[in-house]
Amino acid sequence: MNRATVQLAWQGRGGDRTPVQPVWLEPVGGTSGPVRFIHGDNQAVLASMMGELGGKASLVYLDPPFFTMRDFDRVTRRPNGQSAPIRILTPAFEDRWQSLGSYLDALRERLEVLRGLLAPHGSVVVHVDPRTSHYIRVLGDEIFGPDAFASEIVWRYRRWPSRTPNFQRVHDVLLRWVADPTTPPRFNQLYEDLAPSTVKTWGRGKQRAVFDGEGRRRRSSTEKSESPGVPLGDVWDISIVAPVAKERTGYPTQKPEALLERLIEACTKPGDLVIDPYMGSGTTLSVAAKLGRKALGVDQSHVAVAVTRERMQRDGVEYGEYRAVPIGARDEVRRQAP
Image (cartoon, rainbow, N blue to C red):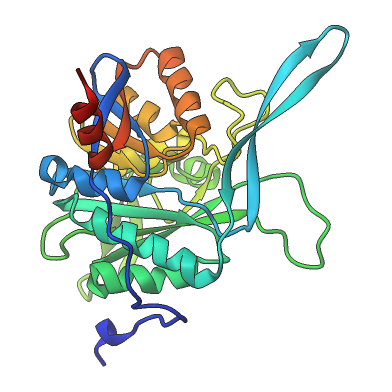
């Protein structure tokens, strides 16, 4: 059976696409450094940057809308004397779609652009939830090829329980594809701590299996060198961003730095380029800079851009900020200039 022949079908798929309007990047603020972020539509921006960035990204991490059919607000708090702080809500972005098909169309078009940005050793990771992960898994296999699928990472977290006649949803899904299955991907083995029972029984030395002459394992021996731990699995227990955490920005879909640290350390090395097409609160950019990587972020939400700017300044990250301007608008300004 040829798995590559399996495709998703939905009403309207394969229809005429709206041409992507090329853009140019107008400097807005910052100076220069390992981080750049751009206010604009990610598909238009990244398609226009293909000449500069094509084949250069070691990791593309997407945290797109989750097809929730909701509006999301940034939450900030203002002191209110002796009373509880006043919560201020600022609209951040809309996650509303005409249909599931329109949502998948938008994601498919962006994944096709992002494929061209990956280095042969690179990976793309799509962060979604169980409501759409099965569709996106098939969609990604179509775009990158079924042999390019590398892993499904389950991010497990704890949160306040909700009243529902169902099991509590306490995980997201991160789907990873490699750019070229014939090229060894960039991958650095990470480790988890040894289980307390293992440490109690064997200590922290490396374990070596001892086999008999017939190849049967008889016992284990402990070496003097210390074990680095257990190779990291694909279920990650990482807390969500706590309400009082220093890294908290109030952006509604902010992901914890620990999650991005683990992903960036595993799939890149210092100096590599990391791209986040839905940069939101700027977590990917901040973590990448702290780990010695270069990073590019794009978002069409002015709130996301403002939050990212504040975060770069707070974290002491040198950055360049840009605004995507349609080529036609730039030419019109030039024609009207005295």
